Image: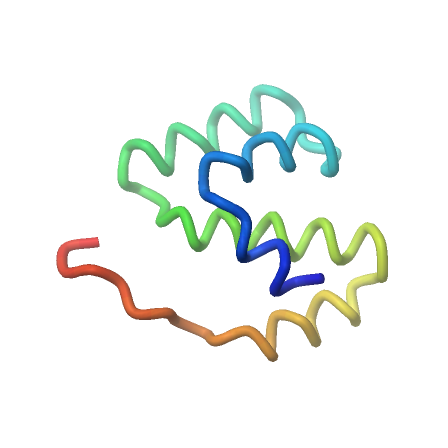
Length: 80
């Protein structure tokens, strides 16, 4: 499930944040602003999403296991 969450398009993750997490609209807007402002990489925002969603459905232990199996860092374009 963690890997599936990481494979969704960046723009779609905001819908997942709205529909599948307990975050408020203000929290989601703040996260989105961090991403669009370059303060937070989209992959890191998606990692947070995957962690929250897997925790909600399968528990924190399953989320930690999924995170460990996912590559720590994917190649990023220069300057990203």
